[in-house]
Image (cartoon, rainbow, N blue to C red; front, side, top):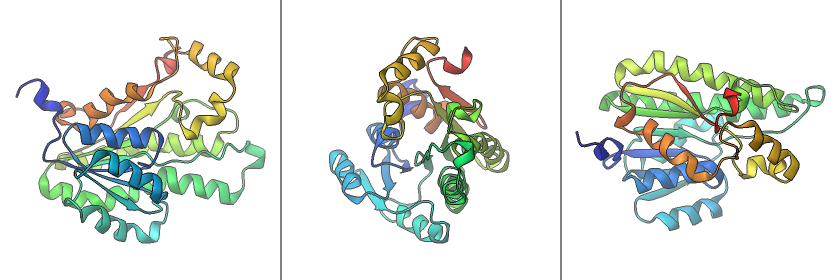
Length: 252
């Protein structure tokens, strides 16, 4: 196989949650540019349609709340309708309520765990049978610096992202014998809607940049290569791993 061909996603169908903004939108665009047919999923219909229009005929969108566990079967049907069942699944939808431990509410806790941890499992569970039939699949979860680090006002978010680390390993154990590799990307500090509170404080953003080995915070394009690696044949022998894309933040 030619070197470049192992990153070619032609003939594959990808589903990306959280595709209306931030790193999810970037991921959906990267996969489309690599040749995949991409179905973007998010709650914000207008933003999602803007993304779809920017890609063209190789993209479709589904407006849906992925945290609604009762409608997972419906979602599975909707994302399979435009191009066939996805064999690449990227779980980029997420929320961080930024509540201090003493202020966490049951509602905030459940919202965080449902969207960040439960949704990736149950959506994957619904779409895995088609991947098994094909004998090939890629699942990419979104981990975080808080998969292994404790941050202020991050107890619910951190618990969900620590869970993502183990969920990824358990998915690999269950499904990789069927040709379905499951891995996670752990972004460092990237400027997105989810991290606006961090970047709105220039001193804090500068401290985070200084904490990395590289000396800067992440730019959207820093995600492209790692994501494409984990979604393609390039990662044929890689599964159950959390790849930190953090400029070396967790190495220091």
